[in-house]
Length: 448
Image 1 (tube, rainbow, N blue to C red):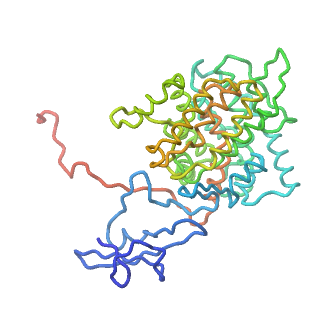
Image 2: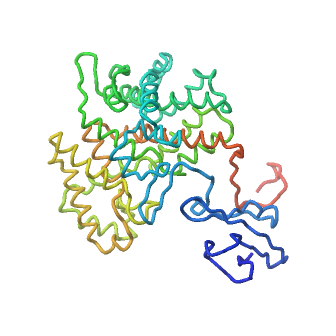
């Protein structure tokens, strides 16, 4: 099947087609079909292939969905070549400098920045819905003492559907709004309880007089025997990290939430599926892998030897925290988080942190190396985030949990967008079957 323009001339630039159509011709049958070219507000055009199966009896083949637009969305835009990330049209740099995570969560889920009253109302609602049912809290005691926190968070989120079944009508806008408030408010409490279980400390209840990130830090580190004072810079750094991780278009976990939600499953089940997808080391565990890499390097003197191994395709050694599947130039979040990393370590008296010194030197050397420059391997958001989390005292087992708290705002926004779309339908990817053809069953006594 050969692509051609309507005048029969081969053409790869869909934007140049004045009629915004793409014609396919099957050379064996001579049958043709026109595929519409759809344009977004910004970004590449897409070819609507919905008629291919009907007209020609074929599917498209795109492993990993590298070139497939699975949905239409108004939430987040990424230009990987230019290093652009927009939430509802707002550059991540502006939101990181001027906004808060709660405001960003409102923006993602409502489409516009709130006025002062709406932001205040939303903030109060989140602050006053942070507690979880005591029966849910007691469930933590049923987990093994060394259970991974992500396993606990995924299970508890899924269990929430057993407590809020009276407000889970996905076709009811008010129920969807209630769910959005509940899950964003309660995820820090769920995460903190998982942390306390993992270290054997008493659970700490949320405080309605604390902001979102101060409350989270308080639930992590407070103990009943003495007061705990939240460091404002720690709360600010955490808020920034949550903003930077709040959404990232149709990534693996977001696509999982959409696919699970497309079945009509309750929203807690969909978010739990997203948590499980995020748990994968290729998705949410990259910042932990950066710290492990730095520890394996050991000291600055070992960097040249390490980079030689990275360049050797036979060594299977990878430079973690550099490059990105989407960003082919630079990750716009990296510079923002790098500056905060310096501030946090300076404030907490950890400027002599050997991992930071090693990270800085590794970045300096790699950015001057032609091998990495030619491949556009620049530091990404994960390169420094793990160091910040470590400086805040958050253990590595909780890194992905922190990611989940942030990404919940985006997951819910995408779930709501999908469910409220009148044209939405259950997700059903197809396949290229390469297994056995039809064959008859052979009784066990006659098998060789």
